[in-house]
Length: 149
Image (tube, rainbow, N blue to C red; front, side, top):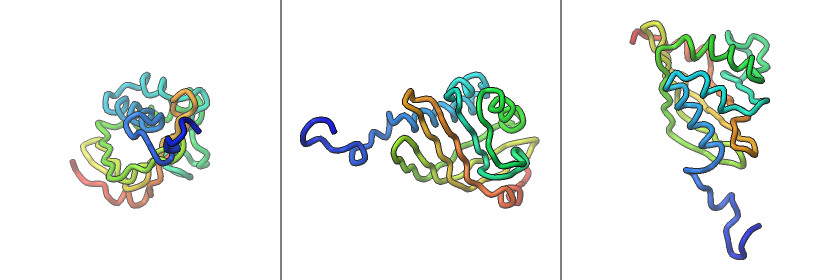
């Protein structure tokens, strides 16, 4: 467990350098920069996105998007169609190799804005690459938030 008297990792979380926090930050920075290549490079080879979790207009079967090709297609039909995406997180919860954020994602698209309230999780692998990005938000509630920018 490390040095005698040292606290176990779950009692001494390094919030700035936790691998999932860093992977999530790189993901959001790539989205903000509109840098698809950087966003894709942040994922592990078998990385997945479920955004939102379950069936949606982006994933009719609700199985998520896995691997470089599917992640690239996900970017093209979601992130790539937006003008800007703002991540507004109120709470960060770190557990094991994952981090969950509670808050909202504000999407600017075609002169309109939507707000998706939810829980957004990032899981890092042993190399610090993004293994899983999962977004728990309700499509219906988000669509009801649609308003002119």
